[in-house]
Image 1 (cartoon, rainbow, N blue to C red):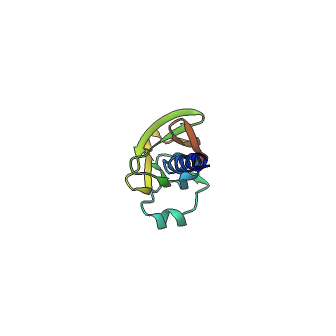
Image 2 (tube, helix red, strand yellow; image 1 turned 120 degrees about the vertical axis):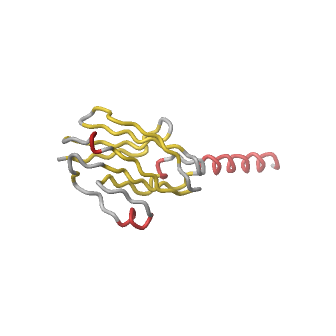
Image 3 (spheres, rainbow, N blue to C red; image 1 turned 90 degrees about the vertical axis):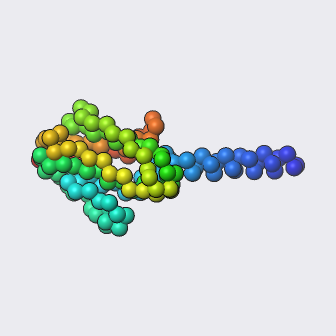
Length: 133
């Protein structure tokens, strides 16, 4: 009986450790793709996703990550009409939550369908599309 309790306690501890390591689908609290960046949690959480973005202006993907230990790396891949145009990896600087901003420079922005993927290791956490005109 004592061995069973010890085993169950070990399993619970391993599950708790894995949950706290970041990278699960619940780590993206908010993600806004816009022609402006959001640097504070209040601004990002109250922002709404635009329906379309303008050509020849920089585009920002502002992401509020939660349950992510400091230093957790996330990659954002940008696609324009199905072709990858940029990939960028950044690490969280805050412990358990942080806002990370990725930028697509104005020179890379042209008309079409922009797709943004948020990736942790080999797992796509989020995929969003928006029209650019």
